[in-house]
Structures are given as C-alpha cells and as structure tokens.
Amino acid sequence: MSDEDLYLRFFHLYRITEEDAKRIASNEDHVTFLAEVDGKVVGEASLHKDGEFSLVVDRNYRALGIGTLLVKTLIEEAKKCGLSAIKFYTLPENTPMIKIGRKLGFKLRFYEDEVYGEMKLMEKEVNINLATSSSP
Image 1 (cartoon, rainbow, N blue to C red):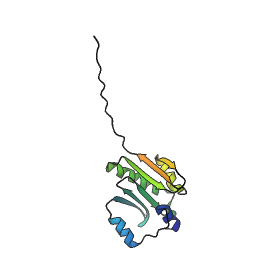
Image 2 (cartoon, helix red, strand yellow):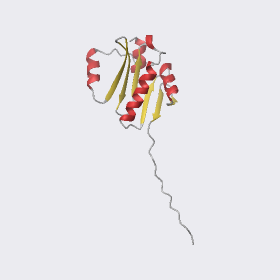
Image 3 (cartoon, helix red, strand yellow):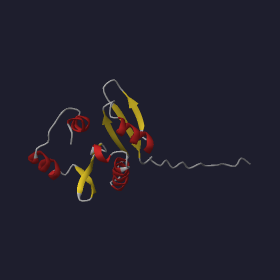
Image 4 (tube, helix red, strand yellow):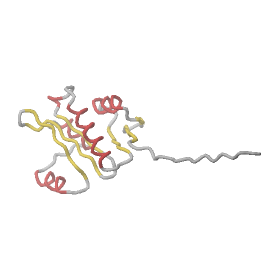
C-alpha cells in the first residue's frame, strides 16, 4: 500500500510489519474479510466486537465496487453477531470511504478532523398493549 493508503487507514503513516500483522490477525476482538483478484489481496475490511470497522482497498482496484462489497459483507456479519449498529471513523479527505458511507445509508457527521459514520442495524421492538374498556 502507498503511504497515502496507510495514512487514510491508520490516521497516521504506519508501516505495518509482518509481526504486527500476525498479532492483529490472531486477536479475537474482530473478524477480517479479504478481497482477492487473480490471487492477489486487493482489499481488507475488519469488524470489531463494538461495531467499529476499518476498510482499505488497493488504489489500483478502487471504483470497482470492492469497498462497497466489503462493507456490505461487514454489515451482514454485524447483523449475524447481533450488533445494534456498525460505525466507522475516517479523515475528511478520505472521499472514497465517505462515498461508500453515503451510498449505503450511513448517518454521517462531519467534524474538523474526522468524519463519523454510523448505521443502526436493529431497532429495539417495543410491544404496546392497548386495553380498552367499555362504559355501560
């Protein structure tokens, strides 16, 4: 990944080492999905137990729907896990992520140094029993 890709993914320039990748992959607080094209990994999306997710797609494979497909996969996984919401944080200059959020119906909040996106997955059901009485 390019330096810009790493910056947009981690909010700072961070070159992940093989040891870091193994540590992250073995952590059980998240699930990760990969997108492959011709045997090459071109995208990665991770969903954490609190509903926060991250996404990165190789710049040579953007605008092909890979990011959207990965986020849709995360939404379905979050529903299976019983999460009530799924959310992301990104930088204001991360236009591809903001576009995906808009396209999929995330509620977006723009701040000076970040964008927060959230999608409610399950609304709590409220059962209301109406009692009627007859007056003689």
